[in-house]
Figure 1 (spheres, rainbow, N blue to C red):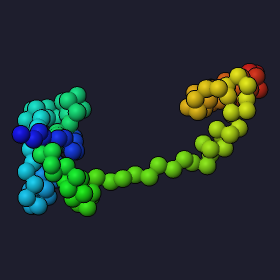
Figure 2 (spheres, rainbow, N blue to C red; figure 1 turned 90 degrees about the vertical axis):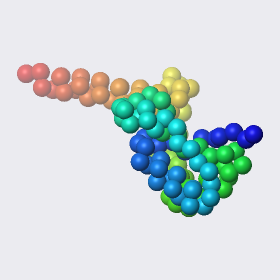
Figure 3 (cartoon, rainbow, N blue to C red; figure 1 turned 30 degrees about the vertical axis):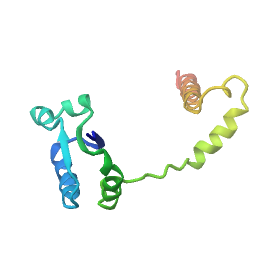
Figure 4 (cartoon, rainbow, N blue to C red; figure 1 turned 180 degrees about the vertical axis):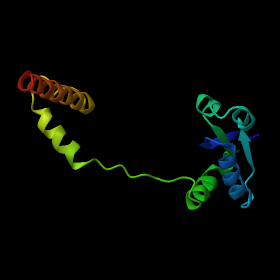
Length: 127
């Protein structure tokens, strides 16, 4: 006996039914789980991981190809911004913060900038 595999999750049941119809039109057996729980209260969707579209183990590859062609699975190319690349190169050389993660370095620099700007405003507009 083969098992069911979750291939895609949705926030709302109607979205899952659209993908289910696409797969069933290609003779792929599907099952939707957690649909009724989300219909009771939509906010449960995030708590339980969404409405799950499942297919039989042997149909996973074919299903993923069909869902990509149908626009349900979109591959996003992640490109790093030029600013973050230069910021990384610049802050790597600073002795005290260079060893931290990029996000931590960004937070430190922004905090220092806001602090210095606040002090300058306080000093110049004290009167």
